[in-house]
Figure (cartoon, rainbow, N blue to C red):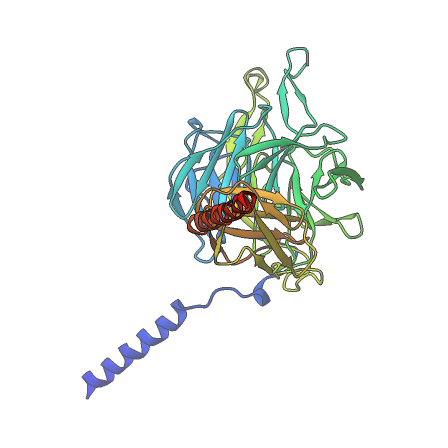
Length: 447
């Protein structure tokens, strides 16, 4: 009896223990807006790193570590609050730009454009910028990567470099670059974020780029624009109102694009420089960075300050978290192809006729899974080779949602030859008739 009672007590204790261990994850109701919490830090402390989000996970890539510039690549899972090492970038870099298109991460700076695929944990080299420069910003708008600002070497400058106002655009589908309207004022471009397909560069002034019209405008400048190395990130409207949060100098400055106004949020827990920022489900993350301090010793002023690298990972809950933005659009455009149809065409030029159920800012079609063409509406696919082809039409709406049609398969064949048997028969009949007429003519003349 005593053994049974003891066994029962042990079982009850184990059940109780398991209940405590199986504590559910924090819900939105447990999060306090405008507040910070510390999360698991990176495995390698770094500054000047690139930070990007793909498939709901954060990737901290490259940067400057204790042993110099590194290609380290770590993946952070917000659900489990854990870090995992991934394949390092081929070219170690610091202070570069990152952009995510179709869940692939593009790392861009100077003569480098390398793309990381988290699905396969592999890297691929792409076409670099036409104008090599550092300190650029990269933002995705309507399926293209806009690389703005930065600085280039300049021996005549006191700092050895000069800011530029360049705006070069990379198309991941064609691996090619084009040039767009330059920024009104040259800036370091990595201080930029996107809201509703507009790029906001928040430096000494607020410059706003509209990719649809290829034009720039000005917004209200930062209240504390003198803060060095400030980094912006935008909430998407999924779980919080669409706003831009600028972290730097220990401060949090908040911009509302709708009202073109600024407010302040809770200060950052760590006051540092050259950190990375990311947003996952409208929770903001400030990762890594460094600080520099001078002591009273003369050596510090001769040989430089003491540098402290950080592996910190601090999560910020924005204002209004838990309430989606009223303007948030999660519905992708619906596209229907009327032509071509699933049949054989006896011509090298086939009409592409399709409909989209809402206004869109960009349309393109992909032919045979290889070549992508931008279009403004219905068109003709010309110069098709004999054989089987397929076409898919995609489009982006104003909220950046991409919709794609079903893939239509069709064939192109040589035009059917004119029936030679009929031609020969007709020719023979014509000759016979002509012969009969001539014979009748000559007979009449003999009479």
